[in-house]
Image (cartoon, rainbow, N blue to C red; front, side):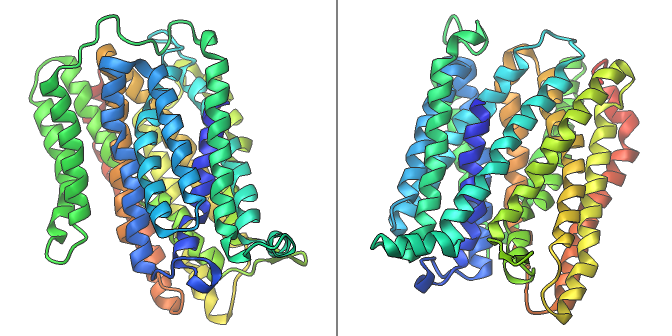
Length: 470
C-alpha cells in the first residue's frame, strides 16, 4: 500500500510530463520540441534511478531503510507540490526534488520487501510479484485521475465555471500526484510497527567520510557527465553507459571467490535490464506521443485523454501478476532460472515493437485504432513480469547481506542508464512520416531482440557466476 501511493504519484506525473512539455504555451504547456522534451525526459528519469545508489548507501550505513523511506517520501511530496505552481521555476524545482526523494525511497522500500523473507525462501519471487501488483494498482489509477484533471474538456469547463484559467489544468494533475505521495507517507508512518526489525538502522553507523564522498561524488560526477553528453562535441561520453558495467564484469570475474563472481552476474543482468528499460520507457515518451497524435482517441463516442493509455500496462500487470506469482510458487525449484526469465522478458518486449511497425505504416491513411496500443502494452507487460520483479528478487539473492541496499541501488542504476538511452532513442520519434516511424519502431524491436540472443549464448557462463542461486 505504501508503494502503491508512491507509484500513484510518480506515474500520475509521468503520464503528463512529455505531453505538458510539448503542449504549446497557449494551452498551458512549455512549447518544447520533441527532441528537447525527449532529452529532458530521459535525463529526469535517469536521475530518479541513478540517485538510488547514494540512497541505498545512506540506508545501509546510517539511516536504515525505514528512515530513508520516510525522508524520501516527504521530499517527493514537496516536488509534486512545487510542480503544481504554474511557473517554469516550479517545474524544474519539482523535477529535482522528486529525483532526490525517489533516490532515498525507491531502493529501500524494495530492500524492506526482501528483508521479509529468510535466505533460500522459495516464496521470495512470489512475494515480489505481489509487491509488483501493488505498485501497478497505483500506476493504474494515477493516469485516470491526473489525465482527467490535466486533459479532459469536462474538467477544464469546471475551471472556467469557477473563474480559473483552464490552461492551468496541467498543474491540477501535478497536485493530485502530490496528494498520492502524502497518503503514502501517512500510511507508512501509521504502520511502522508491523515491520518488526525489518529496515531498522544499523546498530553501529558505519558511514565513513571517505566512502560517503566516493559514493555521493561518484554519483554526482556520473550524472554530470551524462548530462554533459547532450552537449555538441561531448556525445562520446554516452559510451560510458556501456563501458561501466562491462569493466565491472571483467573486474569481478577475475576474483576467485563466489561473492565477487555473483556481483559480476549482477552487472550482466544490469546490461540486460538497461536495454529492457531503454525500450520499455518509450511508454512515457514516443508511445505517449503516438497515442496523442496518431491514435483515434474517440472510443464509443467518448473522447479519451491520451494519457489514459498509460493505464493499460498496470492494468495488465494487475491481471497477470497473480498468475505469475501462482506459477512461481507452484513450480518452486522447477521454475525457469533467472537468466531464462530475463531472455523471455526481452523477447516479449521486442515483439511489442515489431507489432508497432505495421501500426506506423497504417498512419499513412490517418489515425489508427487504439487496439494497436492495447497489443503493445499486453506484450510489454508479459515481458515486464518475466524481468522486473524477478530482477529485484535476484539482486536480494545475489548481493552479500551487508550490501543489499547498495546492490539494489546498482540495479536501479541500470534503470537510470536505460532511461537515459530511452530519451536518446525517443528523440528519433517522428509523427509526420510513416516510413521513418516504422523504421524507428523496428530499431526498438532489434535492440532487445539482439540482447536476448546474446544472453542466451552466455547463459552457461552466467549460471556458473551465480553459483547455487537460480
